[in-house]
Length: 116
Image (tube, rainbow, N blue to C red; front, side, top):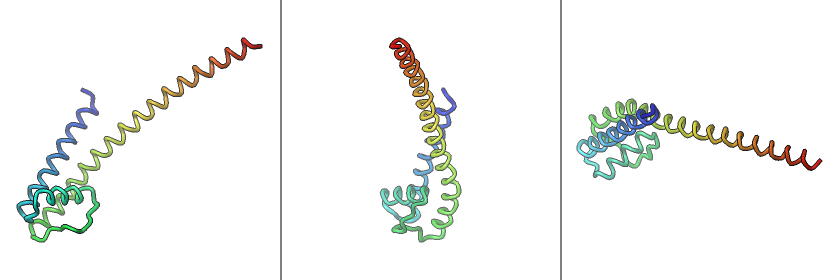
């Protein structure tokens, strides 16, 4: 297993657990329904925060502070890993295209020299 796959799996599981934990806490502590709890957890961790839902209990507010501090780091690490992998694949594609272009240029050179 490549290092990327291992890191991806670990971070993906952490993101799912984080969203699940937040959803559960907000459902029981703030009495949000399950969809609203998941929605609020997602909006909070992505720092979108529309303001349509917010914690009103003291525990909910304190939990949210720590949820953001911990969760944001995990979400950013996950997004960073995905971005690095995408950039790596893009650079591999660029290198492949450069090799193909070089071969095509050589073919054109050969054709030009044959015509002379």
